[in-house]
Each structure stands twice: as structure tokens, then as C-alpha cells.
Length: 420
Ligand code: EPU
Image 1 (spheres, helix red, strand yellow):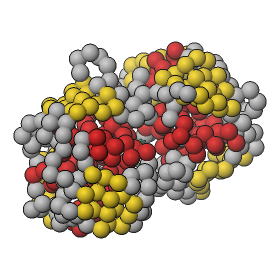
Image 2 (cartoon, protein in one colour; image 1 turned 60 degrees about the vertical axis):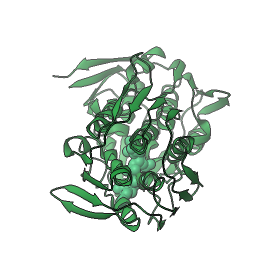
Image 3 (tube, helix red, strand yellow; image 1 turned 180 degrees about the vertical axis):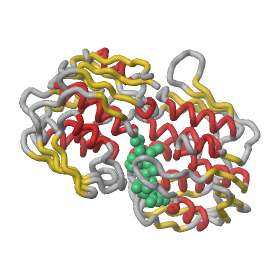
Image 4 (cartoon, helix red, strand yellow; image 1 turned 120 degrees about the vertical axis):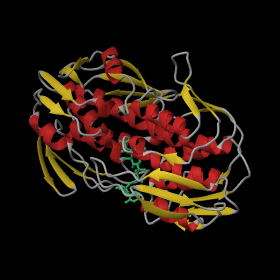
């Protein structure tokens, strides 16, 4: 196993380039199952989750790999499809369940391992399965696998109980080749959902309304191949905004999709961070002290749950009190006890955390428990006095491309070490 060793207290200065979005790339890569032609994706981040996705696509009969030039392009070539997504891969990445709909659309049958819960919550997928059943799929659960059968998926009128990101993406994929029209209501409006729809439209799908809460899909008989560039990662960008702000530095976050990060940017402004958007990103700096603020996670365009842990790290050093209410996941506070080991003053009560700003954090060995919790510990470590050892960083490697190199380039004293 590896860990990150951080010597805190250095204000970050310079330019950080934002990578392609993990959460857009995963469903978009899976949607290549719907195509019978080669497709090349650009701006794909080199991450563990992308390697898992490519491995899953290979098991399902697609040749998927990064191009040899060492860059960020992935080429997926068609081949005969295999309907079984094994547990070994699904258990390492829950988003793999998104192959169920595309396999049913292409083969009329699928056997996909049911993902279990994960550190941040139980994360069931009943919104996905109920909606696929409305489209004519017969689904049964046996030995931990969802078995699916259908003649041809047919259009349906589906209202989600709440705006689920993965559920909306899954049903868009299921509907593009279905017979007739599908209307999805109460959809997730996250930009990653819209990026998936934009990719499928570029390949010939008939989708309208993506980015809003009602999406209409008219089934087509086939899709073309081509090229597509994945959108920038708004959560990675937000993480670098928080890292710069907490250290009192000044960085240009190049490629930061500010239009898709408005809630986080507004909250940081309220906390005393100066943000100057420009043509290709945003300049972030902090001259005065951080101020406490109140925040509640909400579906897009509200404050993203994927930025909750990072902004909480900032709140630990802000003047006055802050509150955080997590409304999306039931167990997304695992960074709290670790931040407290560094001297933070946080009280937890159910889905609410009250944070009283302290004068300083002190470096400590801390344990990463999930992707965004890990990011929050790195951010806290960058501001803390002394050395912080962030252990179990394989969580971080799932979602941040070259994070220590990017931070080192802007002055952070950070290195990766073996942790035996
Ligand atoms: N939920 C259900 N039933 C369902 C589907 C979801 O109860 O059928 C619950 C989940 O358990 C969760 C909530 O609804 O409590 C939201 O789930 P949603 O389906 O919206 O999220 P997701 O598709 O599982 C994606 C991202 C997450 C991000 C959430 C919310 C990917 C691969 N994952 O998850 O990203 O937090 O949307 O924005 O896109 C991360 O990147 O660290 C991460 C966890």
C-alpha cells in the first residue's frame, strides 16, 4: 500500500490543469457497448476507475485501452458482445451496474453482478431496475446476479422517485436503441448526465431535454462511431480551489468549468475566497481570513455532495462556526474523525456537522476511507503544521489523476511513499 506524506504550511502558487471528468467518462465509456463502430474518447483521466472500466469493457467483448501515445485518449473497438459482468469487477466499481441496460438493449439478455453498498452508504439501484422493468425487461436476482431478459426494450414513461445520477444515465443508455419514445421525469440535472447525452447525440441518438429534469429519447436503429472529448472534472477543479484557498495561496485553475461549479464557487466566495473567472478557467486567491458558512448538499445545481468533505476541511480553519448538512448519502462523514485527529473541532449529529474554526491544524497520520474524504485529508494536510501521512490512498487514485504531481508543481511539499 502507499501513502502521501505532506509537509503543510506552504501557500500554493502557480497553474493547475484540470483533467477530464471521471464521473462523465465512466458512463460514456460504458455506453460504447451500444455502438457497432470504433470510437475514440479524448480527455479521459488516467485513473484506476478508468482502468476498471476498460477491463469490464474487455470482458464484455470490446477492445478498450488508452492509446499508445501516453496521452488521454481511449479507443474502443467493437467485437462480439458477452452478456455477463462478473462480480470481481462490479465489486471494485459500483458504476459497472450501468452495463445492464446497454447489454439488454443490444443482446436482449444480461447477467450483471448486483453491486453491494460502499463506505458512503447502502447505495441501492432499485430506481434503475424498476425503470428497466417498465421498458419491458424481466429482471430476477439469483446468486448475487441480476438476470435480465427482453425481446426489445420499448419506450416508456418513467418518473424517478428522486433525481438519481446513475439511474438517469442508465435509462438514457437503455432508451437510445429502444422501440419508440421514452420520457424520463424527475431526472438528475448533473452536467455529467448532459455530457453522456451529448456524446450519444453526436453518435446519432435522438435525445432532448438533457440538463433539465425531463428528458425525451426517441429510439433509433443504430449509432455511428467517431470521436468525443470528455468534459473537464468539476469536482477535481473544486478540490484545487479548496486546496489553494486553505493555504492562502494564489493559483490559476486552468480548464475549471466555472459554469458547472457555481454553488461551490458561491460558497467559497461567502467564506472569503476571491475567485476571478477568465476565458479558460479561474484565478483563485485568499488574502483575508476564511469565514464560517452554512452549507447543505443538494442535487445539481445545488452544492455537490462530492465537494462536501473538501469544503469542510476549509471550515475547520474558518473564523466562527459552520454547519454542513449531508442530504445525498447517509454515511458521508468519515473524514470527520480523521480531521479531528488533526485538531479540528467538529460535532456530528446524524446528517449534520457543526464545525468550530480552530487557529491551526496539526499534522498527523490519518486514514483515507473514500475518494472525497481522502481529498479532504490532503487539503487539511496542506494547511496543517508539521507532517501529515494520508494512508490508504488507493481511494484517491480512483478519482484524482497525478494529484501529488499537480500539487507539487504549485509548491506543495508532498510525496508518495510505500506504507508497509
Ligand atoms: N439511490 C437509491 N436508489 C437508487 C439510486 C440511488 O437509493 O436506485 C440513492 C443512493 O444510495 C444515494 C443517492 O440516491 O444515496 C444518490 O445516488 P445517485 O444515483 O444520484 O448517485 P450515483 O449515480 O450512485 C454519482 C456519482 C457519485 C456522486 C453522486 C451524486 C458516479 C460514478 N458517481 O453516484 O460520485 O456522489 O452521483 O452526485 O458518477 C464520487 O465521485 O466520489 C462519487 C461518489
